[in-house]
Length: 420
Image 1 (cartoon, rainbow, N blue to C red):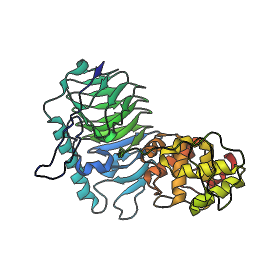
Image 2: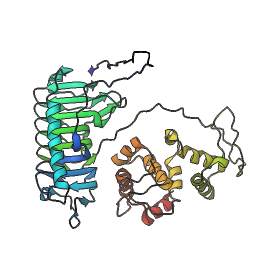
Image 3: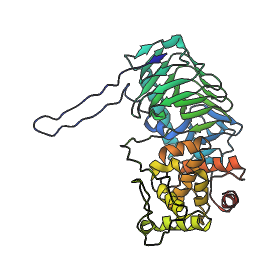
Image 4: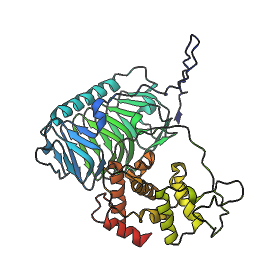
């Protein structure tokens, strides 16, 4: 079954001789304003607990409960610190007993979370009510406001289909339950940040399920073993985790897509390329590359590829593709490995530069883990942030690098040198 609403497109023209302006409005209701709660991946009033190996990408916090009600994380709190840290959270951990301004900030965030819940619950004029008698498994849902006076179950995959600016709000008077191994699937550019599940009862993500969107629960949010959440868990009681992956929503901008040049497959094996050559003169009108136009970073990458046995034509192709994010998928993971292993300096969160961009492109090319997938939505930015650290830690854990802390140093460099 497919539920589909025509997107509402409104054209506003300026009168009185001014040039016209056209604005396309998003389909579905207006988004819910989370206030400062938007800064949290997990926010709860009575506690946050975890067992097993959980990875949270984003900040977490409790209030009015104290830090002792954040269990299973092994928190590390500096003297007079305003936040604590843990290897399980790529971000910061907040509680009202920490140093200023944390107590006030936490009180505001919880108040904003409650206001957002009330907003979502109070929306009127639903697109449909009691859809599927509380069972939406197998459906494809367009943007809109959906309302149930009972609980809602998702026993089989459900798809939310819409553009990057479209909004979904689900008003659920009872519990929300997604079954084991079941997925909420996004299509057409739909974004986690624009999906809101307002749940009066408990929200339960069963084992290895995959869920998208912001959960606003009046009671508890429970993620059972291996469940993955791409969104926020905002609970007015507690959040319970068990070996989960929880990732803060990534807002993806959708500018016009530039034309992607094609590269001729008829590349000579060993073209003659000098420092002053103009191009590789491939036939068929394809884009050609010149190493006379390389930046210093590209020249470094080019020279290293040549030294490892890559022919000059393919080396030029590689370094030029690295400068074109739209073409990133055409470069193999092994080629990225050859590029990233030549990085000579250590890299850590907070750094910037072309080496970090190369590392990010390598992590995206691996496609391993939820953090790497989230990073791919943003792309290579040259900034080593929390998401880059999480993606690197995932890669390290997947290939057996220990400790998998998300820092790029001698241990990771040694692994890359021996495997790429």
